[in-house]
Amino acid sequence: MRRPLLWVVVGGLCACVVSVAQSAESVWDALRAPGSVVILRHSYAPGSFDPPTARLDDCSTQRNLDEGGRAQARRIGEAFQRHGISVGAVLSSPRCRCLDTGRLAFGRAEPWDPLQGALNNTELRHRQVAEIKRRIAAHQDGPPLVLVTHGSVVADLTNLNIRMGAFVVLRRAPDGTHAVVGDLFVD
Image (cartoon, rainbow, N blue to C red; front, side, top):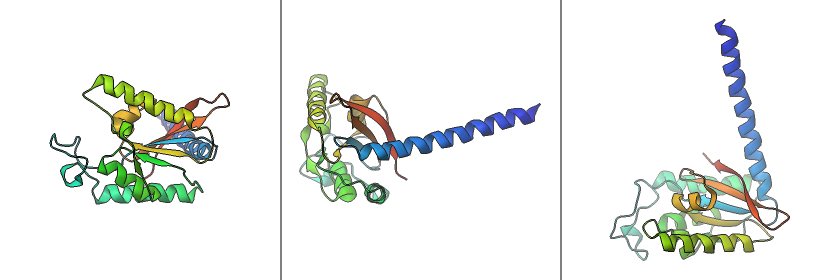
């Protein structure tokens, strides 16, 4: 009696592994399509929020990547290279942990204020999300646009809660809209 239940559990786990592998490959395939977008949550930075005294012009006042986060960002870039994905523009929150993630992964990152988010200002947050969505909609062709940002912004844009160092891929549909293909975490 117990043996069939064990086989059901093992069979279910095998099906999940196959499904995850197929999903990861479809995400990498989507990145090869013109007009795709990567929304990357910055790599691992210990803690949860910047201190209230943090300043954009001084990384030492902010929450930053630790060595593990820096290595994680490099692995993200290596995974893109391994899969033959060259990226286009890399826009980033002006926070140092995001800029560092973009630079370590892709060799460059241009600060863009809307990607910073605004947790405590609902009106500003809605304006920023709308501006980011306009930028995504304008990305019609070419290599992937990369947006390096924070978990709250990723959630606002995609309704997904992903961990630090993970990214969501949007594919451009024939009608010009972008839809979530999936998300990946490069370990």
